[in-house]
Length: 105
Length: 133
Image: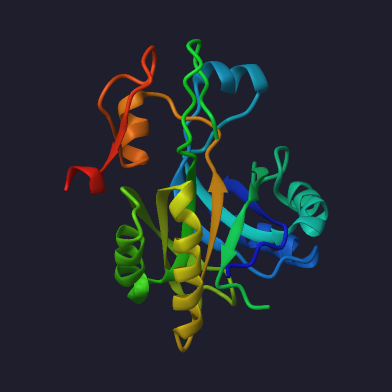
């Protein structure tokens, strides 16, 4: 039976080249590892101007599976190290996971 | 997931997005497993593990599959079994529930369900691939 212990999926999108910054912060807060993908970001010119954010198109997207209890400290650590206002210019959020498979006990 | 419209039609076909991260060499077999389990829509992305420095990070394939709620548990069981049988660098998978889908045709495709009549306004009979065969 697949594990159903409470897990959350943290997704972090940062400017390309800052994945190490994210993972160092996440590991320090208790994450075991993640998966890195390259992505292309988009934003409307209106939104960029309104929020004073410049969207660089080349992105690193990281998916990190964590225990629910560890979610908040890891989110905060990633945000402090790589959130908006830092050089990484990242956004980070989490999704609830209903089932998992293949994770070591 | 239930999509209640003004006529009260409620779909019982909850959908889940199953994500699997595997070594690139194992991607085809996992993709086949997902299709055989009843997933009608999948897409794959290239990824990399985050363990170690750039020189040792493993190339990964990230597979995304949409599957009906009633078939999700069976797929997760099979993925769990498959990962445990792989000798090295197994894999990991997780499921996230859909909260909404826009479009009857899109929903029918993702849920692998034909609606003989529009589900909005009539209590349409849902027909599956098994019914058609």
